[in-house]
Length: 157
Image (tube, rainbow, N blue to C red; front, side, top):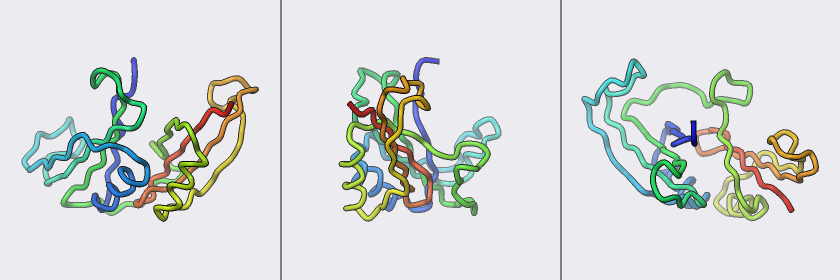
């Protein structure tokens, strides 16, 4: 494997989530499409029976030449929503998504200004990140409007 291609998150209210990811986090919309049924069944993954709007966002710093050089975030809302709870850090399967950022204090301030309080901010070392134990790190967690846990990490110094 070379690089992750995208992260896809199902949401309850696409408009509300778009305000969070685009406006509060500063991601750029590069595609906004509505997929009408019937769509192809995706190898038993349960897609194809409902109308779904999907927005693809580019994260800052992902300015590569082509799709193979970038990681995208895809948020989508289906007409028929699954009635489930967002995962916790103890959840089996995907439970949070992490992003490298340049300035956690500035991002925390931007999130607070948009009405999203970080749930955890900590200074740590790089040992848990595959870095030297001498490398200073900052980490922050926040929940998106649907409760999906997002982690932001910064190398300090």
